Length: 245
Image (cartoon, rainbow, N blue to C red; front, side, top):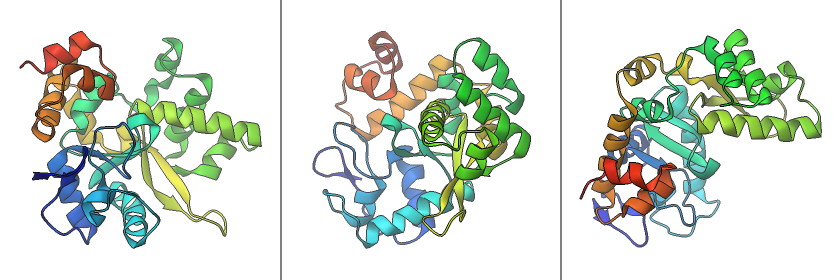
């Protein structure tokens, strides 16, 4: 794979189908949907379009459909993860990210996470609603948690970002709830990716960080421990231990 300008990577193959996109995600291990300023990661948009300046063009519309289709078919993991923006993780590396966060959990463990302060009360409500009812679209989930008001919508968004940031909840396609844009559909990672959750339980946090850092170094060999720590939310000491020179 050739290096392009900035932190984008020039994928030598044409990406025209969801399978092509899944192969790209599998190869890089993790990426963002659209390029993000000051986030040193490849983007699916650039890999498809070869354009450094994102716009709402035919390529953007294409990957917008794929970010619904790929996780729904369990070809990739997708959630608002890196910097709380749309991000893909390969299914192969997902167990390592779960182990890193300590979130290879069962659906019934929401109360424990709340009592130990890892999630907010609103996040607890969303988690328990998904546990009880299965995958739900946005409006359905907000209604189940009594977050239908404008203020409730803000609380919903904040709590959902928290759950996605911990890799407890995943994007799982869409549902047409209104005549406007289709709503996001959410599910618990434990239900959507049970095999990867089981694999994660056999991986230590240190092993997980090492595997993730090694993968990142294959993409960006000159990345410093400080850059790695900032991207993945580690301490500098953790980054140094995980990516020895």
